[in-house]
Length: 230
Length: 201
Image 1 (tube, each protein chain N blue to C red):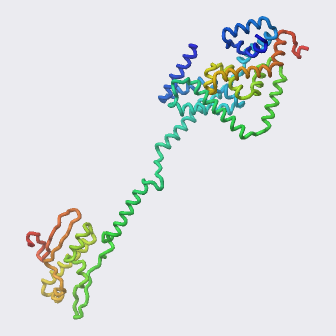
Image 2: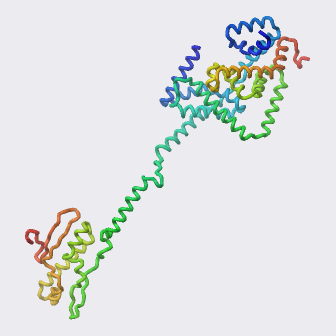
Image 3: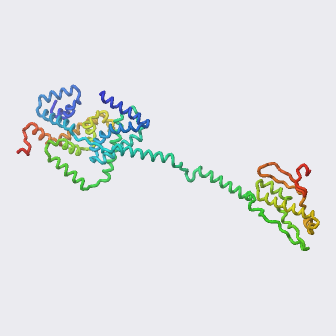
């Protein structure tokens, strides 16, 4: 082998990295060549010096800082997954469906007349002057009288305001009946002639918690049952 | 060889425990590899602070991706690969934002001072010479000759063929030899007694 070839593989030879045959060839050349032997000595010295190179170490608190950092990252990861609510897109179905349902309910409420809340204001019965020195019950009171209430009651099952009106009408009717029965009450004829028969008027009430239709007939003697009224 | 196999087995056992959530095992893995990684990364980045940051980031990545570790592969190869990729990223960042300040000048002054020192300071001369050779040869040399990793592992870490690794290691040794030739000859002459140190004259 020539010196050039031997010197190119001297570093591997010094580390025993060559094959057995190659190693023997280089050794044979080195036995004959002083220059290559000097090169071999330099390489061996270099390899020996590599063991004396300074070793670098991390700082003493490296482990602590590392574990703290990992703990912080785990905390952030846990917090983001567990505690923050899942984001719902602004225009996603998650928000659109409840909004549409709310809008439908509002529209249904508006078109149904607001369950009659704005209608039929609680107007007290008024007494009008009939021009003959007496008073009679205003016809407008008929609007809230039981004879026309069945229409409204059928369409408003839980209209507590209307029930209050009905109760008031009943009280006034009873009062009028009582007054009519008393002969000392001078205007009873006019009251009786108002065109409204306060007695024996069927009153259909539909209780909100009971779907049964109750037919009651109110008379001056008291409430009659449905069978008695027939 | 048997020692290598036992080292491998220890790493596998620790990784299994880490995957199960054992932080004591993770601490042991950190103690086993932190200085080895530091030795390599410092010589690549030439800054101990940055090297420590890279080593810390390496262990964080190891922990984050602990479940994706494939037990068919060698753990040391995996962790070295992560560390070297992070170090390369750091070097690329440096190339993008290159600052010149007085600390660079101070570094150069120390290099010159090392060259003027007596040959007995060979390790420092080797370190200084190592910094002057290109990165790919330097990395191969550090992994093979300083860390004493097998050629096959170096090839997997650097993701290059085995022949390329051997060629680069050989070239790195030759470059170092050329740079250290005057100092080595002086050192040999001193050790043989043919050359007296200046202080004795």
